[in-house]
Length: 341
Image (cartoon, rainbow, N blue to C red):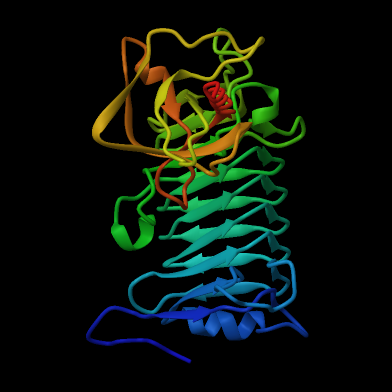
């Protein structure tokens, strides 16, 4: 199968089963997939379509090595998993990109390498890096709803703004932990560097870290985990989670004001939430409860310390996340007693 277009844009080969295995006895061999990626961007998706009754967990397993050099414009291997993406064999791309987006975990159990291409790993729960990630002339983004766990070398040399090899990512290295909106505090996720992992090395490119804080009054400094050379610099921001509260009215519309805090987080200072003209906020459900997810967009931050904070967003889905409360509606007043006859 090839969608190579000598006079136009390279097409995309889309695969859509429930579970998918790249390897012996699986759905496709690593060598076959590698050959296709020379001319074609490929998306493997285990996200079920409406009415799909195929059994399985919605995992993607990379059990064979995948390696390619794109013959024309850079091509991209995209893996969209309903649950986990398990990278158990190396993926190496020259003039190519690697994308993994999933509902639960991205597990990097083998090396990922790109040259003239970028790497995006986005997980609904955890991104777990147990083997080296190396990019030259490309960008890296590791984004997790809960934890980004780094237990191996991450090396980036020069980012890129070239559209075909940048994946539209911010230039350089981006780390986001806690994007599911359940922070602040210890239960909202963070960035974890293993005590035995080598330093993360970045050359001639910026580093951006957005993380869920344990405490707004005592920010975490991750800079000691990095070796930065040739002008590389790090920017660290704490995530903010706007407050959403309403009385149950049968709708999921939300209004945001202030920020969620708890007994140990303290309160962010010098920053306020601003709703734009097209701002929207929506609860995930209409029933009463606490810790209900809220999706929102069109809001920004302002204030003297606004540059120290960021709103919680993932790398595969537009918009932001927080949690809120829908309280029970008051009981209706009793009907008046009938007048005496």
